[in-house]
Image 1: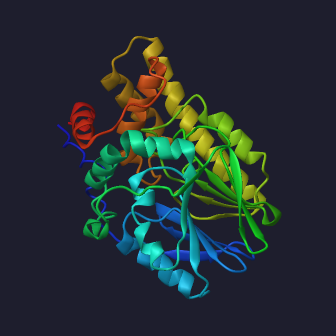
Image 2 (image 1 turned 90 degrees about the vertical axis):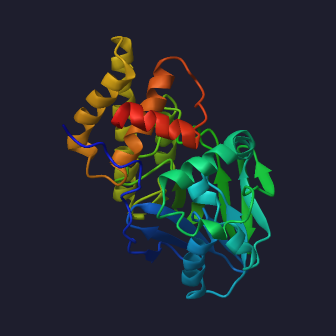
Image 3 (image 1 turned 135 degrees about the vertical axis):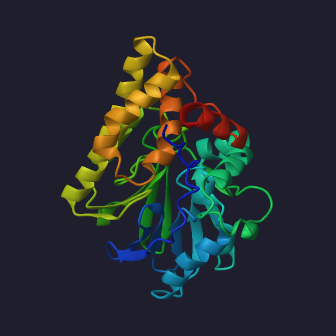
Length: 322
């Protein structure tokens, strides 16, 4: 009899190699072998950071890299979505001059609705990423500025467009664009060679949202996880591979529900079918129980994602992997 899988990312304890890559005159990508990425825009008079890392202690490494190339103040922090692993490092940037934390109104609403539960859930799932969790101030990371649809932030003469192009990874997903430089920071709408976490996803909407993203014809793209994508061909391939993964998960689950199969059966059949194609991707084993659970809900008529709590995480994992 096979041994149960280690819960979520509890076995993922090795530090990752960090890269800080310049993508254009003003855009940089902080990436770390499948760990959450951070985008950086260095403008004429200020810096914008897109996604903050999981803790202030981890954010300090981003700041160190920024300080190697500029001494301009970090005035803006943009949250691509609400997940704790993206937002709880925000306090570190206030020491560097941050004036605004910007998010979509939908992201703000998700923080109100489920931020506390998500924080406890993610800290329980990612012990390495939240290793310095004591550096996180009490409470949640709250946006100080919200928008609906689209807004522009000017860093001197450098315009950063913030846009919601549709639901996917969450209902609040925001992309950041340097339109004239053809650079896009996509958050977790795109995860390159990473098994896109889908516990808060809208599977029916996500592929069409990615189609709209592809229509922007970016020539560099920073995904939520994985290496920064450079060149139009690699950007198209990265978007397409995320689309394929999301579609394949949902198609497998939808077929299982249509045939009246139980969640446990659908889970095993989906993992067995997708592992030969995607099993080598980052956090595949971590994500698939959450992904299939959410896809099963959506295929069963539960339109909006149910709230994940630390308790629900463990209960689900024991049911599917115990």
